[in-house]
Length: 175
Figure 1 (cartoon, rainbow, N blue to C red):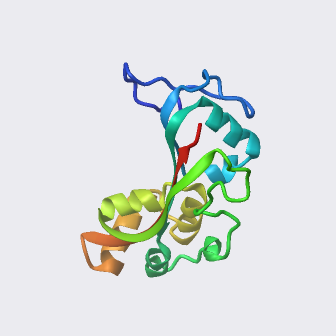
Figure 2 (cartoon, one colour):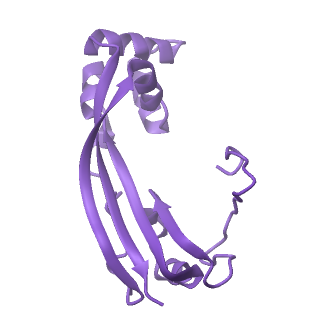
């Protein structure tokens, strides 16, 4: 991800090891966990996050889930991933020692957004498991263009409206 990041004079990217954040105490005004807390929900990470937070720092935990089951069904692609998964988009700091946090907001919203058929094809082919499922159903050398054509045919449109569930939990650090 760092190799693919955009260079900007006001942004630095760092790879952290283990449960230690290599920043001074009381450094940040805002910290976000964007679709990552499920993988990093440990007391040590929370303690380090609080340590590097300034007083009243906002910690925002958010994630989203794009609902594409209908698209896969329209393509005639069987997906095992529609079965229950242990991944939890709603993960927050519940269950950890949160005495130094004040819960500000916890929301879940469903949203709908417009996406072009070509962007929808890119989205469908962007995850390894989804790509494999589609490739097994459509054995063409130019899979992307075949998926675009099938989407246009099955959905009978040049644009599509996808639904997604969004999840947000916001905290303020008490120091």
